[in-house]
Length: 154
Image (tube, rainbow, N blue to C red; front, side):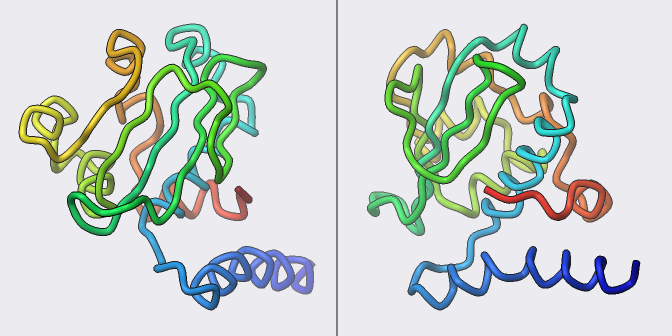
């Protein structure tokens, strides 16, 4: 059993090591999206899918006005939901924000509305669908919740 736990820890650390070695900066968003994916994979997102019915792209940038360093697809429309690194073919809306601002919104330190109104978050696409996505749909990315949903792969 101990060997399986160690193997799981090593596997969970591997993507972060590969990402850092590939020249892509280590992002706080990576762990948050992994937690969201684990939540959905465990079948806990049925109510979210029913409520939101949308597919989103999240473009994470390092500084305002910069090019995206990573993009995630968040499918809250099909099946039990999905989070994966990469772009959705036809997203309903695309959010663009810095890694720090994304982390602040997810942790409740910055409201999505305030981020949008102050230009910290850009939204392209269907704004009505975009307003259905709020960070409180998922468990807060606290250390406890990240540990609970650890091992998720994107």
